[in-house]
Amino acid sequence: MKKLLFLCFCLQVFCLSAQRNFKDSTLSTPWVAIHYGANWAQNDLADRFGYLNHLGFHAGYKTNRNWTWAVDGNFIFGERVKLTNLFDGLRDSYGNLTDVNGDIAIVLTLARGYNVNLAIGKVIPIFGSNQNSGLYIHGGAGYLAHKVRVESRDQVIPQLELDYRKGYDRLTTGLNLHQFIGYAFLANSGVVNFYGGIYAQQGFTKNRRTIFYDMPDTPVPSNTRLDVQVGIRAGWFIPIYKRQPKDFYFN
Figure: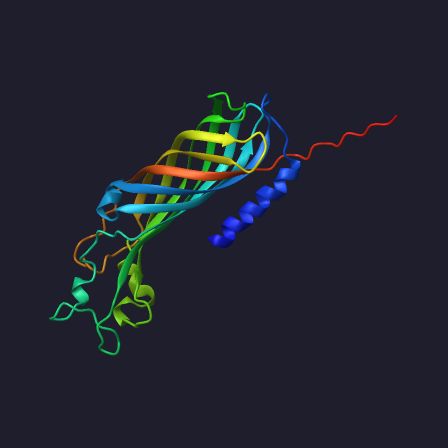
């Protein structure tokens, strides 16, 4: 993460040589951004997970009419998994999970996932900073996948190795929609280019496993799920402006 932030900072500084003062004009420009989101699971997703982090990117193009086109993606991760009885069938009479050597095993369950969307949006100048900053709205559609990551660290637990983990991971995928409303600021000059606001995501997904090992006698639900996430997002823009021509004067 530190290396990524340092690389983005270097790119932003490099782009300064090509920036121009656009206080009174609306410019078209490619841009990329990295962002962090704090989200809370809702609807069907809330049965599995709690608080979820998003670490992502937003890369596209802003036109001289302030329309934006972009690819928006997130790596989703969290530590709050509500499926607390996943491994009850693997525990001994003392309630412990044991590894191949008979030692008590430590097993972690974590939330993992990602989404990638195509997005269209609009920057609406307000507050008078410049014509390229203001209310920022975008939305889009794409693909969502999430699952329970099972980690046993350095211990070998035969019932949870290789493909056996798939029986517990609840892999779920499907169509994804998202909406964002907030504020975007592109400085007249300098590296301060940011955005932040409210973010929402709706996944229309299905379970992709044919059996849940913790419930082998119960058919896996085949209905379409509504996996909702709602939260806030803050990001750092890196606009890539064309280099301005140099002026030459002759006597």
